[in-house]
Image (cartoon, rainbow, N blue to C red; front, side, top):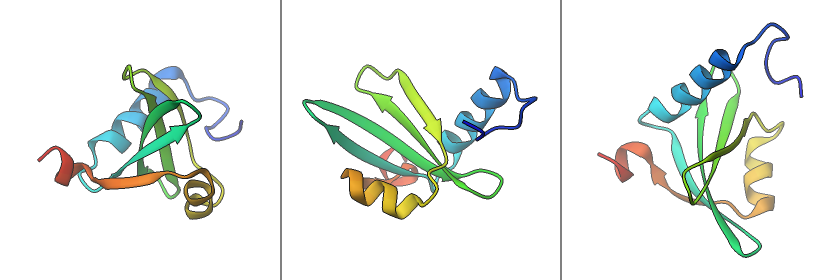
Length: 89
C-alpha cells in the first residue's frame, strides 16, 4: 500500500510494530467492529502516527499510518483507553 519503502522486508515491518508497542506514551484503543472487539495501539514512527490493530486473540491484524489519524479513529469509533504507561506500568 506504499506505507513502507519498496525495499522494506518483513523484519522492517516487525521493527516498526515493535517500536510503536515499545513507546510508553503510545495510546491504546478499544475498537468494536460488528460483533467483534479489536484493540489498537498508536504511536509515531519516523514522522507519521502508525496504528497497530489486534484481535482479541492477540494476533496482529494490520499496521498502517492513516492519512488523517484523528479523523480515522473518530469516524470508526475507536475508544481511547489510555497510554501504555498507564495501562501496563
